Length: 268
Image 1 (cartoon, rainbow, N blue to C red):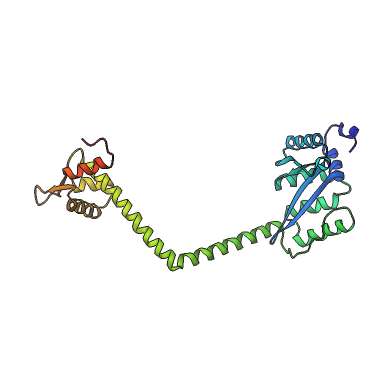
Image 2: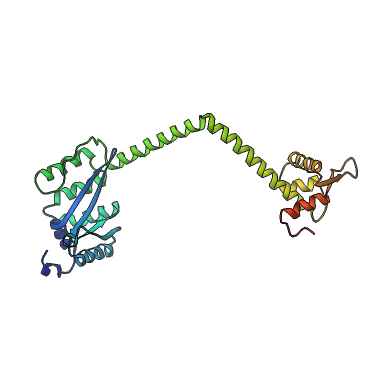
């Protein structure tokens, strides 16, 4: 583009003319779908930065300029649009003003909007390549889906594979062994935490098993098992004042020393 043309006020007509001369539509075929990129290559970084600013001001997401260093004499700057939404919006705004790249731009736009299947899109782009209006290779493949359908098929396939892998892992003897051991360790850890909470609860005053059960949010049966174990370890004493009342518990000196070892500075 000449220096005089670069001084013209930026507009979509100007962007389209620039893209006709210096732009490109890239294609990458994937499983069931096709990725499309939009780029402009130029040695004049200022021109690309001005276009990128215009695009961002127009609400185009993902317009970025970056440099490709191929040797001092061959350095090239590129303007790329990095989001599908940005590519769709840019193609839609340029389409009325394009000449050389009009057909391939409209084909890319309607494919991105899932209005044609991938095979139809590649046929159009290959014809543009053969006609010399597009650089690049001829693309082959089997893409009988719209873009949305292709992406959804890949997603479903990936989910199915992940589920199959997960089921295989779950059913393996090694995983079951690790899961059992992990559950045992988790239960042990929860039990230790609950025992220490009971000891801290008793550090200020003695309480009966019902009061303890309510405070630690455990069933009476679970609480009684823990208290029986701590009684056996010598951490608590228990007494019953009548046959109708639950056992009352209080800390022993051993229980207090255990709490001190845990770093509980509130224990006298």
